[in-house]
Amino acid sequence: MAKGVSVIDQIFSCYHELFEAEKRVADYILAQPEQVIDMTVSELAEVSAASNATIIRFCKKCGCQGFQHLKIRIARESAVVQEKQPSGTIHMDDLEQSLHNIVINKCEEIKQTLYNIPLEELRTMVDRIKEARFVLFAALGNTIPVALDGAYKLNQLGITALCSPIWESQMAMAHTLTSEDVVIAISASGESKKLLTLVDRAQERGAAVLAITNYAKSSLALRCPYHIHTVARERLFFPNFSFAFTRLAAMSVMETFFFLLASSKAGAQECIAVHEQTIADDKT
Image 1: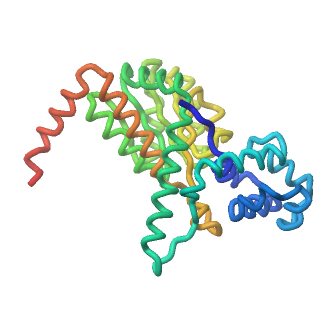
Image 2: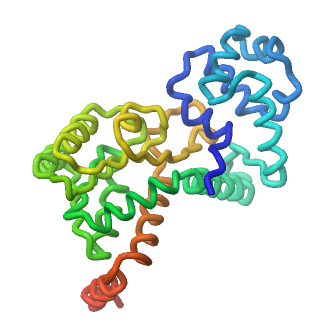
Image 3: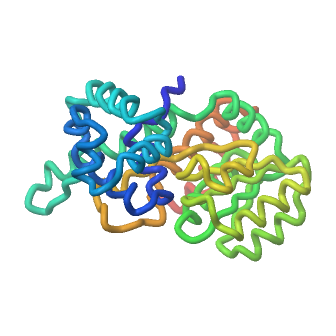
């Protein structure tokens, strides 16, 4: 099922790690991908005010063997999605086109995220969560809503899940973990020192740890035995700003776990029915 993250999304993923000259190369490629296909290394270096060596270094950071490999991937991927090539244009004077652009890019975020989850890791994590004594969600700042939603979904299925918006409480919970427990750590950058500290403690106590981050080579991703790479394209719309996190791809991962667990865990659907019945009186 895994198809490999597109080269455009790999550029988005590693953008924060690039040097300024490399970012100029990335900006040009993101703005003019079809023109890059017909360019030489020297031509791209000239228009992006970078050196040939910078171009080659940039290509390798994006998972390509060199500039020719980068062009081949762009050409192949452009041919597949040419009829719905995403645009970064959002304008109140053209709401229909703006909505179209948002839909295409958000759909692509979800597709690139879910299609590239390692299936054996996914199967293992579903099984670990299913049998866990409890599941601790760890997150800070903008990722906390994703963690709270994930904990709520698991509790609906009859799986004890804990999440606190206060990091000290999360850390206190980590000290109580055992080898029967699971930690799901969610971070855009994957570089939060507090989350890294928590994950280290969780692993010391034998808990299984899954990281969900925007960057496949982040410290958190590399430190955890299981990792899901979420794709975020906010830079396509707002290239001059660095957003902490867009939640849709991470939320889709939570939905995926919910559906897989609901269909495979004994008694899960009964738990959902009981929960729904309990809160039914509050619904009009």
